[in-house]
Image (tube, rainbow, N blue to C red):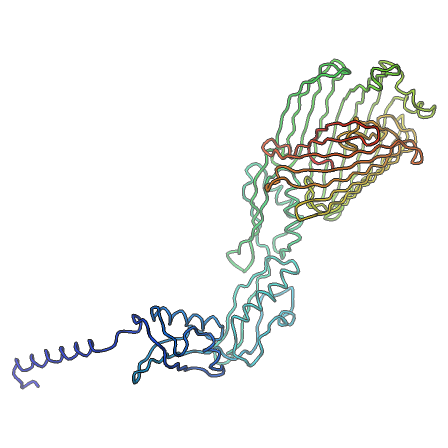
Length: 588
């Protein structure tokens, strides 16, 4: 060719180019742009252990079926269908071929190796043999990764979740295709070990308090359990300083552990008030009050109330620290109070008494278990009174009259034991509460008596969001009991529909029942239907009784730091009459 003239060689090159162009123009259009193609045959290569029916059944393209859409899209879609069966190492390759006027769908697959077994790593709570019982894959059959994923999700992780290990997750899930261990599945489990606890939104509250509260239930380095997470969340709620507590889990950057995160919304915890009122007994009366439930960001409560009145001056100071340590709590109270009691007003036997009580108390307690706690309280009270009008003790027999006329100092020690399994101490929906106390007075004081109290409560969910709330309270006092230590029943916190402290005595039984139901989705308003009953007297065989029923409403005012405001209208079912009562928080 090198000896040919230059013009001959140029003509040959032009001819060859024209020939190639003509052949390209005559070729059929690429399958990716074809539409209306009818598949005449399907040929599968690469099958070793699987039947062809496994492939054919998974396809949406069938022999004799026209492909109406873009061929490339349909081929890719069917490749994904096959891959999602779980039998193949990679998405199968689908192409169209044309032979002797027929359109052939060519499918090339790469099967997973036959299943050999599972190697577990990271499991300490359950043995590999225990976890293996949730694997339904049969050894020797082609490994189906989708079936294994379902076994892991519903079986293995389901077992962890059922037993409360909510932080467990799969770190790695891989099928080996190497010749020496082909068919072995490797599963690495993170069982939810807490690496760290993070708090967000606590602008005022100190993190040291939060870590102390949560640390009672959850510790770094331990596996997270659902019950512990829920109780820790409720412990934070029960501090009374948060509007919202939302726990969440994030994978830790290393090691397959988790970060437990609490998102907090702090409530308004401080409140101050000024009050002015008038009564026929005390005349004009003013009050100044202050309360802070998160003093210094440490969850401590301080409160003070000062009363200004011609006949009724006084003050009361309270302090409480629910977390001196993770197991101990403390409270103190100091008061100088004066009040007047008027009985049978506007009648021939009208009486009025002016009562002074000055004293204080110190209480120390310890959490014995998550739900059980005990406490001991030391109290000192000086009691005195002055009769303003009439005879306030005229209705009592000689023995009780002698006891109630006595004044002096009470020195007492009170032992308490409480089992609290409520889900929320402020707005309980589920759980139980049992509190018992024994007060022993004497120790050189003017009064020598013993006082026993048992308070049981039960909260039963109904219709998901509603609550049946029940309380039974029994009290018994014996010995030289002063008037201010008698049981007093009637009014906003005992039997609604009755005047305050309408029934008094050394023996008492109180029953309360409420049906609580939210009136809106956010539970800002809650409706209540209630019934109350009480028996009070000097012995359980001779008591004065009272019964009432009514309706009420609670509405939350979080911006004011008040929790819920309570309005109850009670009807006295024994003597008739009705009263409207106002309170803060649930009665029990």
